Length: 205
Ligand SMILES: Cc1cc2nc3c(=O)[nH]c(=O)nc-3n(C[C@H](O)[C@H](O)[C@H](O)COP(=O)(O)O)c2cc1C
Image (cartoon, rainbow, N blue to C red):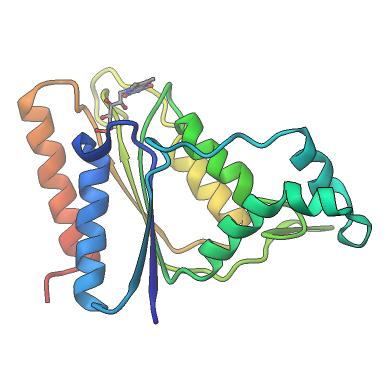
């Protein structure tokens, strides 16, 4: 059975604009695969714990030397990586917080991007150990990240592109909803652009 994993990093729950577009992506995926298993992780509202000292120790201990306590410290990471491995389509909705990903999304990344498990350290650098899969990332920003006007740096999309590639996920489509605090015209423009993106990525059948 195909599986969809939707990660929603907005703290604003159902009011989130990135989350709304993420849910539209999921709806279209489900129309194509009605029997798909859907897992939704609202990590912005129900945050994962940050990694701790036990995790950091266990991660760096070679598997053969890990104690029961080390294995216990990696349980959550193991479950989250297994959930991702079992996923055919990944959808990540996230606001920009202080130019980068919210700490809630960073916490998920720290559990999932793990040396010797989701990527290998090789003489040629880090090599992804997970299979590639179509991934949709919807980013929302109050200000602008493109255009000729005053704009801010975007450390969200290049960072996510890099960190997903490190674990083997390269097939990533981004949509940025920008200018969301700049009034109704900017919001409408962002929504129009998101609908056009959706129609390109997953046309109505
Ligand atoms: C803590 C915090 C930091 C933020 N930092 C930025 C920022 O650096 N740049 C920006 O454009 N918007 C920033 N915003 C605004 C959000 O990105 C914006 O409100 C976004 O559209 C909310 O997305 P959502 O509707 O998906 O929750 C910030 C908001 C919060 C709460």
